[in-house]
Image 1 (tube, rainbow, N blue to C red):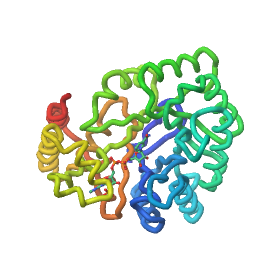
Image 2 (tube, rainbow, N blue to C red):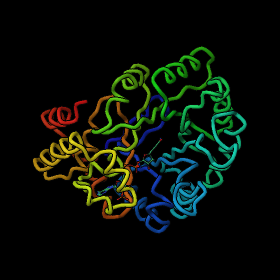
Image 3 (cartoon, protein in one colour):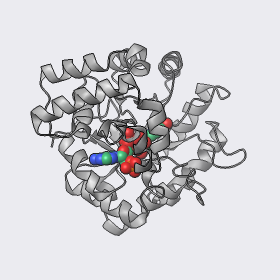
Image 4 (tube, helix red, strand yellow):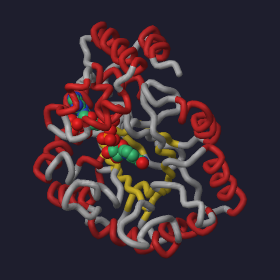
Length: 317
Ligand SMILES: NC(=O)c1ccc[n+]([C@@H]2O[C@H](COP(=O)([O-])OP(=O)(O)OC[C@H]3O[C@@H](n4cnc5c(N)ncnc54)[C@H](OP(=O)(O)O)[C@@H]3O)[C@@H](O)[C@H]2O)c1
């Protein structure tokens, strides 16, 4: 399998990243282990999570996903073969959120403990924190990099002006810079990334690891009518956000392209992302072992220029 350089981070990753928000939510520990085993057995090495995953599931408090990944790496003895990305900044309890140096110093220790490791390969700011100057946040990250607890840093959900500002602060001060961006991006949600962020990432050689690659399952084609909401715990949200005229046009194009390749809509939706210049590795998840075949096959699917043009047209915004 082709490996890709993750921007200038020094990390080398598979062209698809497994998204860990399902662990402890729609995938219990045993299922999570099977999903992760299948992923690495197929030659992939890149796993993304966050301290807060999966706090929204009933009975959870956050940290469940990191705990499952940590237990899995320990039991498989494979920490050195995994490129591990996690995040800080979401609320982990009263006053426990944001990107202040004090919270980052605490949160990183919590993540390292749950992950049962001494280092995080890519530590990302989950959300912007306008109340903390970039100098302070990046200064805290510098400490962690100097201590060997973090290898590189990235940002998620930053607007274009704020990403530019963060990069300028790094250039001016010599503090570490965000080497990666994790934006929402998929065939349905294109504008937010393509309008400005994509250009900034390409100009600055940032790695791009987009989330919601399958639009939370919509681009698999399993939601075709309102009756399909029951297909997943996520069904209601997916149908209300994506099942409209434009969404249906995108599914129709996915069906056609998939038909030409003997593939599935999921595989084509991910292959379209992998083919996009400047994009390093889409993040996608699966909650059941039988869904893994599509993720694995997607990385091997090569779309033709005509396929990409058809998908671009159907998803024009
Ligand atoms: N930075 C951020 O703010 C942020 C926000 C959101 C997500 N993320 C990252 O992105 C990752 C991916 O996000 P996501 O899981 O929400 O979205 P996704 O990758 O767009 O959707 C994946 C979901 O689609 C369904 N699916 C996958 N393969 C399938 C198949 N072959 N057939 C049928 N259904 C299939 C599964 O859900 P079902 O259980 O419904 O079947 C799976 O959990 C997360 O794990 C996280 O790492 C980051």
